[in-house]
Length: 190
Image (spheres, rainbow, N blue to C red):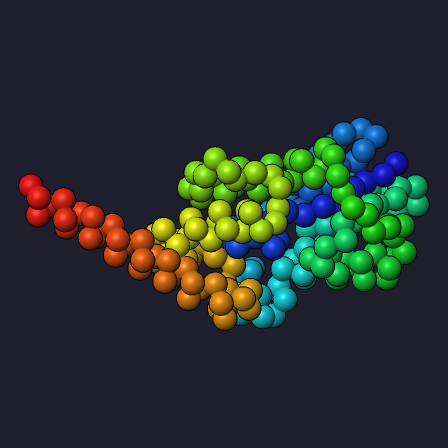
């Protein structure tokens, strides 16, 4: 039997991240949550997400009644699993790095999109496909209501603090300045 493990949201700008497990032969699917606060402030500096993901993987494998002697794990190559790989090696767990596609990837990315919708991201362009396009959808969403939405940002990411936060603030002020001007000029006409 084979269990696949994949993640979603660990590199996305806002919200929780998710770890998914799929036993391919039986289609048993489990998704665990890595809360946003692990990616913020001191938690990020102390590498808390990397530690917590080991516990989530242990829990997920336990939930699937993983049998070390007879099962193999296909583990996503993402760096969020660095300490998981070390744990597997120390425990003699049979695993190999893999590019996860298909059912599990679709499910775990789908859970992330569902979570982002729950946070209020309404863009019709938001999809399960990670990358630059999704980054800018989330960045623009934060910038539109910066002071209320910044708390949802994974602020532990260095580039947020050195580049993107300032750009989001600038965009917010530009949006609201032009909105204010439009509102003001329409009031003058009335």
